[in-house]
Length: 216
Image (cartoon, rainbow, N blue to C red; front, side, top):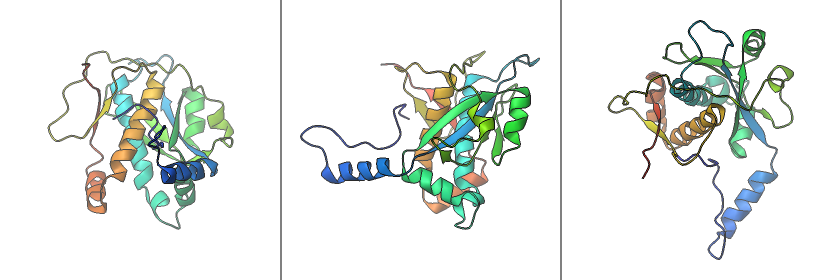
């Protein structure tokens, strides 16, 4: 998985594709939306914060849960138009963090909470896309920068057959930024599948792993 912007960009220079350039211009001229994700990080949890790798994996699964939810896929669903408008532009994602009353207020808004399998498990709530300048106030007030998490021990090797999203080892990112990038990778993988493969992945609970690729 590349950690660059997951939206396709036209190439530059003499070999640029005019059709791709026009398509990108139309995409950028459309109203822009962002997919909000909120990770729960309590200040003084007895078991400590979630592990970084579990948070990345849970964020990726949260994006897939949103993309496959009937409220998003059904043309009559409450989230269908917002998800469609978001996917017609750049697939922006922003990860914020919350604790205590902030988390409870976030959970009162429409969305889905996805729980990881670490100890303690990561908790990530994903919300239907919102306009770039139209965040709900209970999400807009949450911190977005400086979300840092660590892995207490190196993550185990993924189970055989598990899809793996690979992070670029040359890029240093906060946990929040890496979570957004893991979500990008999961979304690109989802788009690459046909309907039967999507249904099977969803039925299995979206098994996946997120790892940093080896250097060199």
